[in-house]
Length: 200
Ligand SMILES: O=C(O)CCC(=O)C(=O)O
Ligand SMILES: [Fe+2]
Image (cartoon, rainbow, N blue to C red; front, side, top):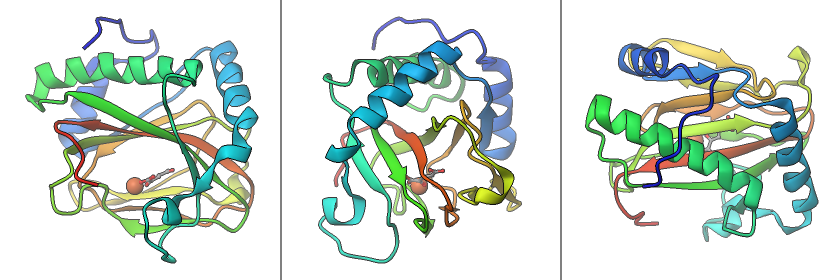
């Protein structure tokens, strides 16, 4: 893994403590507003390449209705986010012996009326996903626009997390969660910190 330092606003001690106690944590104001702007531009410039997430997986279902674009080396700004998550993975490996070896990520776009029903990102513990991360990159979000991440923490408590711009939600990939129906276009990068090759 590359040796890149964590962004300044990421408080690693707090992240480790929250993940340990609750299984999730929030990083607000994750990046500079300049970097966030460039990410928004990169994302919106490629919106016409986004694919229906359900069909992409070869499954036609009513579980999720978002649209996604996997991040490859062409998407230079999104790659920087992956590098920051790679630096974070090194710290988490040190703290928890997670054995994270790679980060996979896609942009996601939920248009008005779209959602993702209750699920776990690592349902049978088989796909190597250890920690899930969602970075919200739309430029504003109002309280009545819906689109919250609803998540059950490791103590069994439910949390409703607004997709606040420039926020990262990090959570154990085995926790139950859903994306409530969004009333506006909702943009994000979902990433998984993985300990082995995906079986999908
Ligand atoms: O966008 C979010 O808040 C969560 C997305 C999610 O659960 C997923 O892509 O697996
Ligand atoms: Fe998920």
